[in-house]
Length: 252
Ligand code: PML
Image 1 (cartoon, protein in one colour):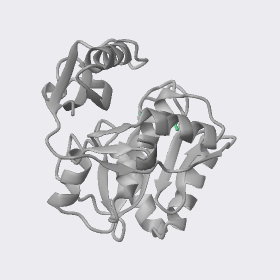
Image 2 (cartoon, protein in one colour):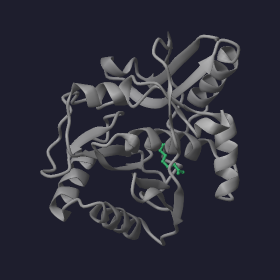
Image 3 (cartoon, helix red, strand yellow):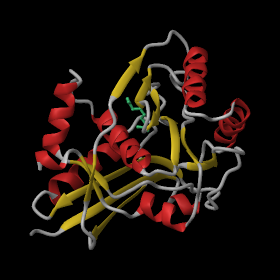
C-alpha cells in the first residue's frame, strides 16, 4: 500500500506564531504521495487568499503516517437560521445545556473564549467545573490527522441534500473526530475569519448543529471550546495524532 502523509499548514503575519505573529490561516489533511503536490497547492491558495490578510510566515509540515487509520463516521448536520448574533449565541448555549452542561459552566467557558481569542487551537474545558484543562496557554490544542474519504463525503452530501462547501467540509471532519472520543461532551466553534459568521455546536448525541450567526461580520475574534468529562495525555494524543478517515468503511 502507498504511504499516507499527514499535512499541516499554518500561516501568520508579523512572523511565526511563536514569535508573536498574528494567525492568518491553518489547514489539516491526510493524503497519498500522488496527491501531495495538489493538496499543498490547495493549502497555499487557502493561506494566501485569506480575509485576515496576507501572511509573511507560511509553514507546511508533512509527516508519514506510521499507524493504521480507523474510520470515524461523519456527524449528521442540522442548520439553524437565527436573526442575530445574540440569538445565535443564546441558541448555542441552549444546545450545550441540552448536552448536560451546566449554565454557569457554559458562561464561564464563553468568557474564557472571549479572553483567549488570540489562541488558534481549541481550549479544553472541564464540562463539570468550566476550568481550562490544557496547559498550552497561548496555543491551545490543535486537532489534526483527519481527512474525509471522498466517496463518503459525496454520499454524506447527497444524504443530507447539501452542496459542496469547503469550510463546512473541514469543520464537520474535525468535529466528527473530536466527538467520536467518549470523553468529549460537546464542542462549540466559530471562525476567526471576519467574513465568516456561521458557527456550530457539535456532539455525538445531536450531531453537527450549524448556527447561521455566531458573531458580527468584520469581527476577527473566533475560537473553539471542547467540553470534556476527562482529560489526560491519551486524550491529547487522540486529538493531535491519531490518524482517522472521516467516512464509512464500507464505502472504502
Ligand atoms: C472555521 O473555519 O474557522 C470554522 C468554521 C465553522 C463553521 C463551518 C460551517 O459549518 O459553515
